[in-house]
Structures are given as C-alpha cells and as structure tokens.
Image (cartoon, rainbow, N blue to C red; front, side, top):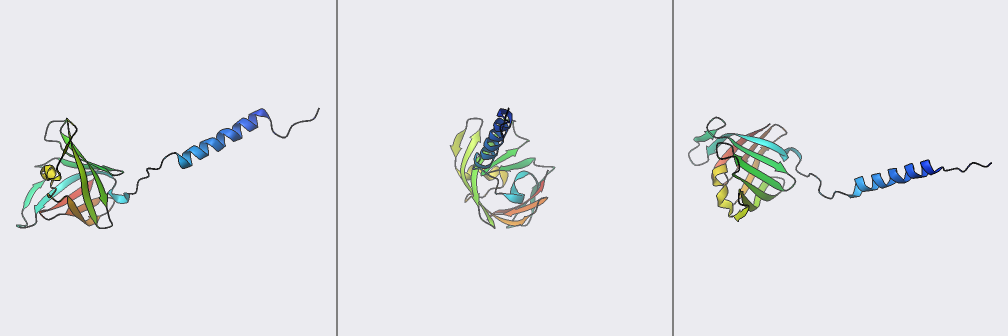
Length: 150
C-alpha cells in the first residue's frame, strides 16, 4: 500500500495555521500609534501660565487622562462616578489637538471648552513639553499640566 505524502491531519493543520496567520496579520487595521502617550495618566500639577501659581495637584484634584488609539477619556474622580468626557484627538510630533467631545452619562456632543475642568483651553490644543513612558508635561494657552503614568 502506498502512503500519501499528506495525511488529512497534516493538511487540516497546515490550512488552520495558514488561516490563523492570515487573520492575525490582516484582521486589525487599528494599531496603536501613540507610543509613550498611550496609557493612563494622573494629573500631579496644574499650573497657571500667567501667574505661575499652582492651581491644583494630585491631592486637591483627582484628574486622570486615559489614552488609547485616537480616544482620550478625561475624568475627575472627585465627581460622580458616571461623569466623564470622551474625546477624539489627533496629534503631531509636538502637539495634541482635541476634536469631538462627548459627555457621560448622556453621551451628548459638547464643545471643547466643556473640558475646562480638566485643564483644557477653549481652542483644544496642547503642546507636548515632555513625554516619556513615565512623565508628561502638556502646555496650552492657559495652563501647564504635569502628569505621571500609573
């Protein structure tokens, strides 16, 4: 009796591996492009640019930014649990631009100036002063915000 070079098992195995590899390579077109910016950030200092006075720190405000893909969640944990903002953003090498803003709990679209309670200026633009995997400093026309990654 002559033996076939491929058995049903090996043919099924090779087909399964080929399909799995194809799906893993081509199934997700949303890859993280944020580098060090991606992740969870705690506000440690909120400084007024005009007076250089510290307006808040991590002990007086509990503000957090969570970044993934092209969405940023801004939340003040001293507020009710279900109250926070989601924003679409885009960025360049040195700047962050807030696009559409949505407010929870009602998921309604709001203007960018509704993010003022998180240190965002009305124009919705931040400059990256420092960005590492551990620390971040953002500056806009009104404030300088210092964060630590957690």
